Image 1 (spheres, one colour):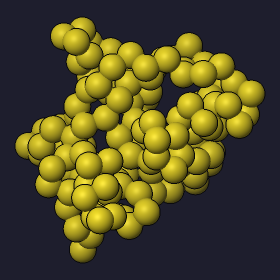
Image 2 (spheres, one colour):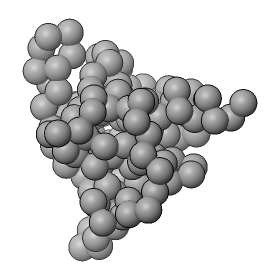
Image 3 (cartoon, one colour):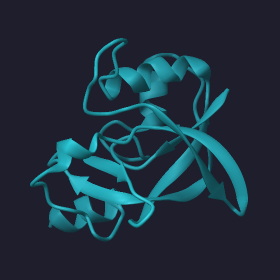
Image 4 (tube, helix red, strand yellow):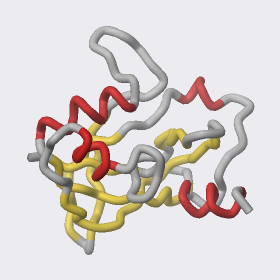
Length: 135
């Protein structure tokens, strides 16, 4: 088991909902540990967001799940992570706080160069941003 911080389409109810991804692949359902934030800058790629870690940035909201190790391969596929290939998303480790407790998580930020010219999501919450733009 390991933990993952999700901030975009992998969040519950979104197009790549982490629970639905597990179910489609007959993998144990992820367990929500709680909400957390990461300092960074969040950008709108249209159908999904991209997070650039930045200590001077805003608090980007997401959720932390405990997941079965098998689910990592599914998440990597969704985020187009392939061995030996530099893609848009980069699997990384980060420590976040959930209810005042530090939790080490895998997460998927994007390369800084990839966000040039894209609109920034200044509120720091992809779900809220997507819903307010869908009206």
